[in-house]
Image (cartoon, rainbow, N blue to C red):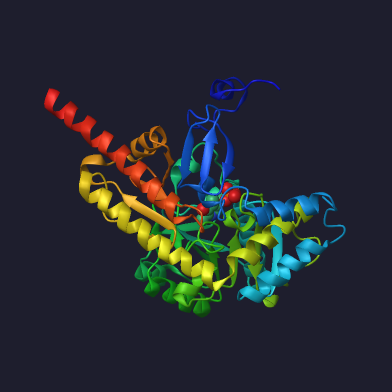
Length: 409
Ligand SMILES: *Cc1c(COP(=O)(O)O)cnc(C)c1O
């Protein structure tokens, strides 16, 4: 087989990523092994994707069984795995209708297109989309434009118009801004890429009330918070606030690319035959895997385990933060956890990730100032403890190096 290394990346890949120095080649549960055989505890799950760890037997079985049966039909024909998954998603949530696609960005693209058609059909000029600073909704031109981070839109102008950004969790500014011209308000129940910032209950309840007042759709982007990560199947359940449209991806396929937009019967009718589509959306392989994920995750015992693990992990993380003064008390919902860097370590979350990799634990950042932890929803206690131990060692090294630098300066 052709020999490839991290150096190959720089020779043959578009440089839009800067991957870690190591290349994992095998995974099992919450452990990974790289080309050199070095082991890592996985506190990242890709980016909150492999919700059931690596190579979960039920997912491997679902994928291989379907691989021997039928791979692809397109949407000229429907297929059994897609119909079963849609039925189960509608039974498990507020939704009555499902649109399948291949990623979170595509799920949001569908949601925003639905919102525009809904508004434009209702009344001329009703097509403003309201979103929030630091939001992240994907990397298509429409979704980066709705997202609230300029670094992702810079240089890609002209951008789609009539999108407004407001401060997150600021109900007053939302109330002051919303009008009959607004067709949708788009919210991540916990801002993920923006730094693991949970919405307040007051904010989501208020957004629901204001959307009803102005006939605007309330869209929840649950691409990162969904499929059990929050400790409920979908994070909206924590808040008791039901959206009109919900997007889900990441954990939905447990590592197999799949996304979905969920909505009600009424709003689904905004997208009649021919108005939107995807060649691969609802692919039998993807839907067979996602069905196995949903069957496994939508279980009270598993979801209770998420909350228990989250508590244990946050206690461990906060203890490390106190010991070395590198980060502040953690925040988040369920197993989507952010630890903000302390004042002295501002901008250096990536240093913690790199030190962690040296010590055999894989964590993430959420922006330059927040360490993000998003392990498997079923990470075994032993792996959780070992991961914390390795992260502790990584932080000890960073703190010792910083001391050395300070005393030699
Ligand atoms: C990751 C993410 C997306 C984009 O999903 P892709 O599968 O990368 O297109 C959208 N919204 C949120 C909240 C995300 O975390």
